[in-house]
Length: 396
Image 1 (spheres, rainbow, N blue to C red):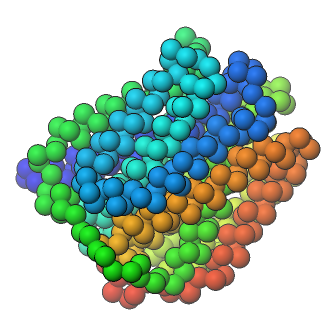
Image 2: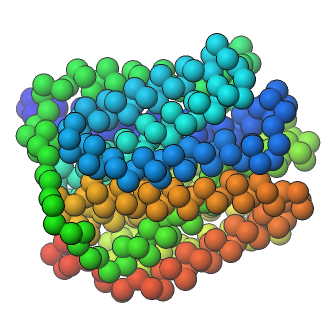
């Protein structure tokens, strides 16, 4: 294998690791929520805010992130973003109070908001002939970050670090800092397509269906983060142990892995976004309804929810690279993330507010979000990519 090929593989791995760290802390909040509620005496509103606040910060930070990356360079911006996430996760250690916890999630939100559009740009640059493939890899890093965090936070990491929630957050932050050192090590070896910046001052180009995709992205985010925040607490209230109560969330993330990996197939078979979004959103509606009606088979619904939200998520993340020329990928990704994460805030906050009536009404709320995705998909053109762009994006 040539030196250039080795560097390209290393870049793929580092993109995956950076994406991994963009999901771990936020998802870890869910398994930790019963501990946080008990230790910090949090109300339902403040408990839901632990996920809603970083989502809102991500939305705000995603708007200027493209311009920041153009000024600082995408490599430096990514290193800065990961550093903010890592250092921010160390803040609660000496405080172990609510203020330290919220400072951490705010820092994580800023870091993710800066990192994700840059990651999309780097993924697009390293394989410009097949933009869907590296973007799928990057999305898989996000999905795996959620899966590992949900699976290990309560049963493994919490006992390993002595039972302190602040030490768990510091653990995930340390992994982000390790990724920083990896990026610094390859700085001088990056290929030209990674180091160059493509800027444009032209008005944002129209793309039929892009805003419908962004709205769908927001709705699936609201569903995912509502469950990522509240699903363990739901089962704890039903008498499950904390470790056992984290399993349904881990299964959601397990389903996300399968869904994310199958996303290119859905895009290829659908020859666009409309057909996959309609089919997958209806399956998601079935799963959310099933979780409320037949909770005895919750694991089945959990894996279906994970797969369907991941397909919508991954296709949404791939949309800027598929629909826009290279000069616009960063800014289009930032806009997609800003809309998506701003809408996702409604998930944990709305679900938490509705828990005062029990958990049936919050589940109906998730069903409504699932059907909203179907409505958005109906507004997408049947084939929204240019034929040549479709062929380049879908090559195996």
